[in-house]
Amino acid sequence: MTASLQAVIFDFDGVIANSEPLHLRAFQRTLSGMGAELTAEEYFARYLGFDDVGVFQEFGKDRHLRFSDAEVRRLVALKGEQLQELTRGDGVLFPGAKEFIHAAAARVPVAIASGALRHEIEEVLDAAGLRALFPVIVASGDTPQSKPSPDPYDLAFRHLQAASGRRLERRRCVAIEDSRWGLESARGAGLRCVAVTNSYPAHELTGAELVTRGLNELTLEALDHLVNDPCPP
Image (cartoon, rainbow, N blue to C red):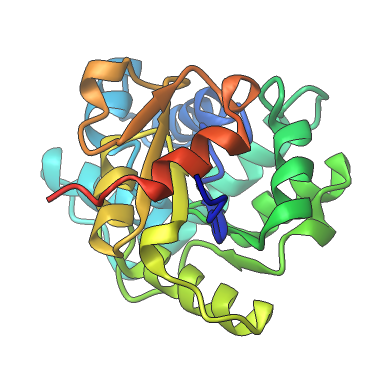
């Protein structure tokens, strides 16, 4: 077998950072201030795949609330303040995430394609000593559409190719995701798809070619095998 993995593009929340429960609590605090309730069941079933703007827009539509663009921006800012307060503690990274990222970055170019805000991503990476390993970060607002659109992964791939100075083949680049929305985005961008079960059980992660319990159980050898297999239809 030829070791032919060329790049790895990570989702952030739910893959690298164990922050999805914190995002939920931040959304709940923000919405409770206006008398609205968001349950955990609703969040994971309906809203997790959106960026912050998308969550408030979709929540407004679902609850027949008319949020103006200015109101959405205000809610996003309030939610960001709540999240910053909640993430001041240690231990935000999933077990094995730091080690796997170091191993991957030593072999191939790595990037992040996320719906989180850039400063949220960079604060966590800086605290963990990982920021310098990522030449490319695609965050909320960097693309016309967020996941499940292919835009975030497509942009991350193109920027990573430019940053690496290499010609990369999409079928030999792996996206690592935790949700079906993210997997749909990565597949739409022509990338190979790995899922971790940090947020959803394996049977809900449709579109994944390989499913693992977390980065602590994933190996570069497994990714080499994956990219050498034929692409799914």
